[in-house]
Image: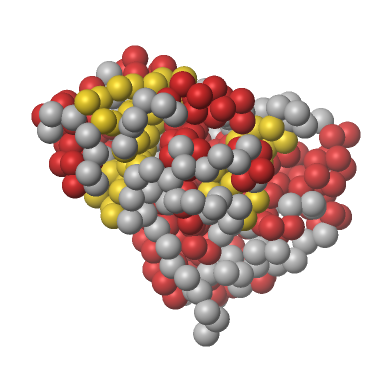
Length: 393
Ligand SMILES: [Fe+2]
């Protein structure tokens, strides 16, 4: 067995209503002056009040900064850091989707490191641990609350860049499904499918191990059984609870086993065509799975089982292929486009997309089946055609 390190948030606090514990947890961390980091939309929904009240009950001083924007650029980190650095905050609480949580992670370490934030890009370039921080997701998808990386946009070359460090893991993640009840259907679908991609990719990844396998399969099971209900009947708390837990488990598995070709092929769609991350992943998942299936029939057969498909009497190969169809059906049922045509890609764009995706070796080297630029082009071409024809096996 290969040597591996399993890392996640220092503590996981889960369950409906768990956000009420944030006050006592900040107090335990020694916090006296707390900063909530979020965006304007989350602030307007009133969700932030569910965080403020328990903090005030502990007689803590609480401030809010709501400057986070989607796909945050490095500049926003610098502006926000400049506003807060001399205010004497001792604990940060990040509340929101992936962007708010990623910004919180970086601001925590920017309080204790003087480097230019762009110099932190890459693996293990953060020298000192940051301020203690708590992350509270309000969507079920990114898994950012349990991963040790954060993604930012570099406006100089219009490329997304990742910062990877153990210091980006929070002291505590609080995952409360009640905070996700008002997420609109399209966002629920895209973020939920992103979480499912995290689970499937990390389960079948080269770096997967026994620790991550069980966690990933449970995530696949929870998300597959509840995503449709969460999208089409968002007030269903049980479905939202399954999604919150499924997303958390998928994030833990992703944080330790990594992801693969779906993410690699999705990034150029995000960069060039501004396709939301979850939509790009979901759209590509069945096509990449179809390509990957032969590299690990047993595991893809397990994916079908975890999705609740009836695999009785099927060969391992047929069961594995059933997983591909089940994934395409789920994606369609929650309203995700089935062709990259629908998100603005034309056939002439495919070679340059493939060229760009082929450079993301960090992800491609973790994919269960090796791919070269021609293989990637073929997958994009299939995703360009009609789903039913392309997915026929
Ligand atoms: Fe993702």
